[in-house]
Image (tube, rainbow, N blue to C red; front, side, top):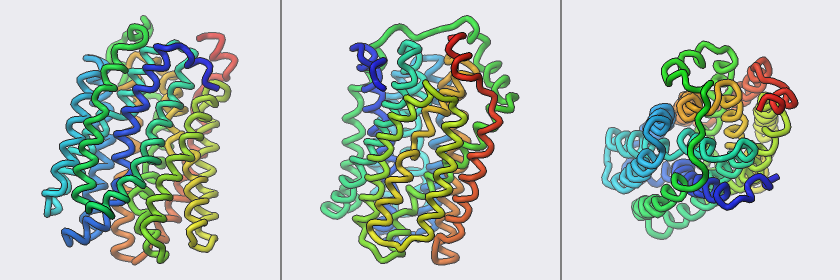
Length: 404
């Protein structure tokens, strides 16, 4: 599955990108652990804190096409360094914020923009342009697995820090962890071959964006990825609250998030291999359909520690594993010259869904006292996402191989 990554330069590029994503995604996907202690400390209310995190979900997506465009034009190194510094700043100043506006600035803007600038659109775009064609699918799976490994590591570590030194100390520790990723930027951008450029890709950034936005398949891809964002943001923000409603200890939430990350390491590696063997639209349809079934099963099961761990393992297998087939589809449809920008736009759709998932979850618990209707909406949207991917225009694998 990973033989195409055996060359030293290919491995350095792949693992450096995976390491950066481990930090930025580990930080971002663990924010739900801070909701309860933040509320206890500031008294701002779950809805206010959820709004700040929801804005963060949107901003993480909004920065993706901009960061991708900057990286496509000026190179990824400056974008990645700036992103890591801004993410560290957002974490460092959060303990000093005592109002809803302050949390919007620190978590909704700084942390989200920083983690977004050091995330998928820039990293996968930078790696794709420095790797041979045969290594890109497997590399995207490994890079994606880096983000999942970050969630696996960061969730329990930050939970222990919150319990040991308080949520403020945990935030400052998170800022230091972010800065430790800076040396990896140089390894990513100076290794591998020179960035790939193809004549048929050189139509200009704006023309490429206009062409993509007029393509029905690209818009269907956006619709499916919107649902993915709703699903992930709802769970990563409110799973700790769901665990609390079920009368279980906070450790169940942190370990559930860690299990999601661990399971997605495996799922991401398989996703990277699957996009080299099967049409990506079918991979995506299967992933989204499985989520609808898993949510339905969860609603029927007794709410015990084991239920949450099994639910987390099932969801984790496809959690961020949608990224390699989505990026692969964008590359197949439009080439890799502006992959950072065009994939960044799909991530914007993802995070519009993420905004709704995080914010509506906060409203649901505030107004209704539980997340029942959010679970129903999540299940329905996942089923719809499975269906909208099927009409996407994608060549058969043997045809694609012949023209590569």
